[in-house]
Structures are given as C-alpha cells and as structure tokens.
Length: 497
Image (cartoon, rainbow, N blue to C red; front, top):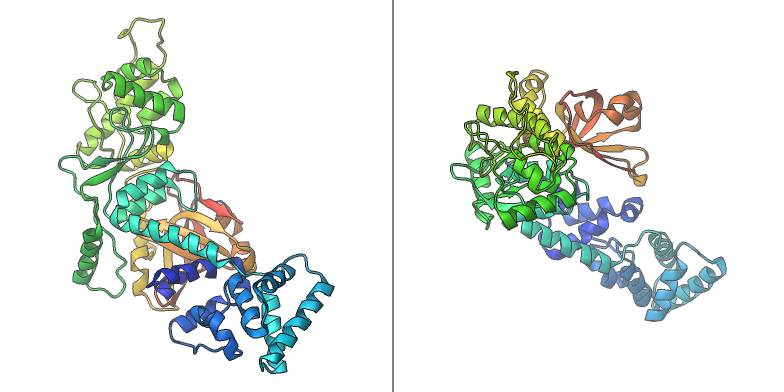
C-alpha cells in the first residue's frame, strides 16, 4: 500500500520504494517517517548537520548501507576502508572487542569535528541499529530498473507484457487467471488455446474480425461518469499495441506438457492445420488424457455442421454464437474420448462412438468452470456469476472501494489470490482478493484469523465483512468476519510465510 501513498514521480522514488518494503526498514521504523516527510506532513530533520550529506536524498531517514558508510566518513572522518570495516563489524557476527575499538575511533573522530558528546552517542546507536537492516542502494537501483521497465511495457504494450508473464509461469504472486483478468481490465482480450492457432507457449494474435476489446475498468472513487470514461480513454491512448490479443499456449492445458505442446505446434507448422480431432491424435501422437483436456479447454473447436475443426477459436470472445460454441465443446469432448481409443494399428477414419447423445448443454458458468479446470484461465471472472447474490448481501465492487470513507463498514467478496504472513507483521495475515473489477487488500488480525481459521486457511474464495481503511489512495479492508464463498473450482492461491 505504499505506492499509492508515495505516488512516485522520478526514478529515484522507485529506488526508495523498493528499499522501504524490505523487512529491515519496516522493523527499523523507517517507512512511516519517510512517507510523512515525502508528503510534507513532517519536517525533514537531522541529528546533526554533518548527516545531511548522506541522508538528504532519503529525507533524513537512513535506508541504505552506503549511507551508513558515508555517515562514518562525514561525521568521524573514517576512510572508505574504515567505513567498510565498520559495516562488516556491525553485521550478524559481531565481535564485542572489535566493536568497542571502532566505537572509540568513531567517537574521537566525531568529537574532532565538533559533534556534541550526547549527539555522538545517538548517532552511534542509530548506526548500530540500522546496520541490521540496511539494504544496498545498488541492489535497490537494479530492482527499480526492472520495475520501471516492466511498468513501461505494461503501459504501452500490455498484451505483450501479459504474454511474457504467462510464458514465465510459475512465478511471483499472481496466477495466470489474475494476470489475464488484469489484462482484460486494461482492454486486452485473451483467447483460449487452439490446436490450429496457438503456439506451444502464450503468444500474440490480432483481434478476430468482429471482436471488440474488453471495457477498461477504472476505479471510480469520486469521479463522475464522464471523468471515469476520460480516464479509461487515457489508458487506451497510451497503448501502442492496439488490435492485439493474448492467445494462450497449448502448454497451458492440463495434461499437455511442454513436449506435447511443442509437437502439436511443430506438426501443424510442417504439415498444415489439423482437420479433425482424429487428425490431431494421429499426426501429433496425442494421448487420451491430453486429448480430452484439449477438448475441455475448447482447443479442439468443432464446426457443428461438418464435425471438422474450425480454423480458429475465440473461446469467449464472442465471434461464435455462445450456445453453438458450448455445444461444439461438449461434442469435442465426447469425440475425443472415443478417438483416443484408436491407434496406429487401426485404419484411419474407422472410429465408433463419436456421436454425442442428447444431453443437457453447457451454460456460461459450466463453460467457465471447464476453462478453469483445463487451463486455470477463463474470460468471465467467477465472481461475475454471483454478482446478484453478492449485491443482495451488500457487497461492494473492488473498483468502488475508493469512493467510500475511511472507517466505513464494508462487505467484499472475491477469489483469494494470495495469503501471506510476514515475519515483521506480528502474526497479522494479509489476504489478496479479486473480483471481476479488481484486487482487494484484506488485513486479518491474529484474533480474526483464529476465530475464522477454517475459512481463512482453506476457502478458495471469501466473503469478508470489515472496516475500510484509507491512507491517501491506499485502501485496505480490516477483516472482522470471514465466510466461505462458493465459486466452484478456481486456481489455488499463492501463499507465503
């Protein structure tokens, strides 16, 4: 929640932001003083004017190891070698004798520069405490460069950025579902896997004819409807990859490993598109589990009139009438099971049991659950199917939370994206929830976690009742009650200790 409060304006703001969220500055009490000073709520002060040279760029708050070394040079006249020796001595394996020798040298040097005795003691104590958590500035700069480059790509090339993250899975906090949902909220559509269109990994594809990009969702806050539309238009104006969508890779499908995915893509590139499900099974040597999972994912898009595979699959993009698309998927799943029983020792085209019986068709919710089972990604967010029920229970959308006042009682519902309990949080657990409009930060105290432990630990989705906290633009929900929310099968949360 520090980014909305700091509102980075320069690259060095990002460098400081990276350092602030490290465990050390949190334990050392540097975060809130820096934010207050950054926002003009507290004056920038120094224990002694000699500290200004080292601490001016971080508003008088020590954050980096390099600052510790510079302080010893400026205040006590240490050489660079002496400063590094002190840095090492203040590390985890401290020697009392060595520390006393260095302290004496520091006190003598500081006194020679006119620093009062009581101030020398305060500076030394701060150095000794700070050394336990100081983060190298060079490391912070390196991380900040990655943050800046990633942010630039996400702003200007959001489709490519999303595809790149999908190719790098598993990684980080967010699942492929959360990544693609975020992309959709920024106007980037996602197409499901298709044996005649997808590469082995996620890739870019031009929008299919007749498709419109998803509506950009902007957190409303106190914005009028016109201002919200203007903000959405501004986001779209920054894009440099208009007309492109993300196409999921074949490797995103359950039971289809890298080897099978690469083989399907290579066979298609060498010998042309697949014309039937049997063609896929024979030419690419795809087994029953993988074939049925491809069918469940909608990656074997049958033409209802001919039984042949269509040239492309939009998977929720609206190019094929929804009812027809779902019926084709059901038929493909039935046919895949029958065709998987054949093999190279049998004549091609002699397959029995491929005609599906008249069974109830899939509805939109069933299609989404099939997507989630097969790939972990669906165009329609699971909470969207419960929105009417959630509204009746008083739930607020994620995008509307910024319009509420600090201290408001609030109800939110969403899929749990992650659970984390940092060592610095004294047992407090932080939950990430996601609904169809955005992400929600939930703070769960030790007492609340204990009382609702079963739901908190095991439920893939939660209804949370609590109190809204606002610090500038940062919004959290302090949980008072947690209830399981039945959304069906969803991707597992990313949990960290």
